[in-house]
Length: 200
Image 1: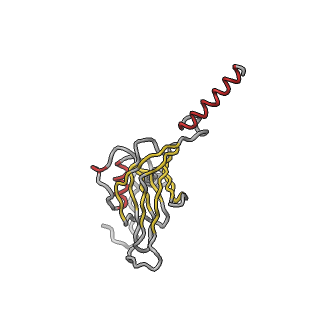
Image 2: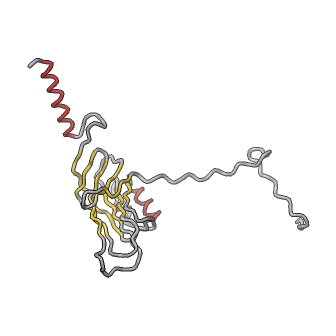
């Protein structure tokens, strides 16, 4: 075999090895690794606004605390949170009790996407259930690493939710522009009293 052919085979073997290890040309090969997540907290009443499953990637403990404050619930105190990323998985609003959500410890990392496995629970037909709105959610801690998205697969392997970091709050509206003829920083004069109204 010629030296040129031997070099070509060596390059191909190296590329295959890099692909198997999760490295290589960005966008061409995607590495995959098994990871383990840890449940930090859960609630049956997470004040979810709609009935769709969702997942939110919370990049640090402060993001967890901000999410909890916005929803008015507590899944974990600050002392229980490590400096790593978290995933908040929500089942969605349900009309009664009897619904639940369980996230498996075993997960997969595909590139920078954490893929969680979850079991979505519904009450059996005809069962007695509480007649109160519920919205189950589970907070899980991700291992240290870089994440851009979290996918949640159900027990059949179907992706039920996919999400990234929460959207930043909308900026406050700018103050109204002064009327025509007003100088910058000038306060417009008060409106004249209506005809016949007493002037103080």
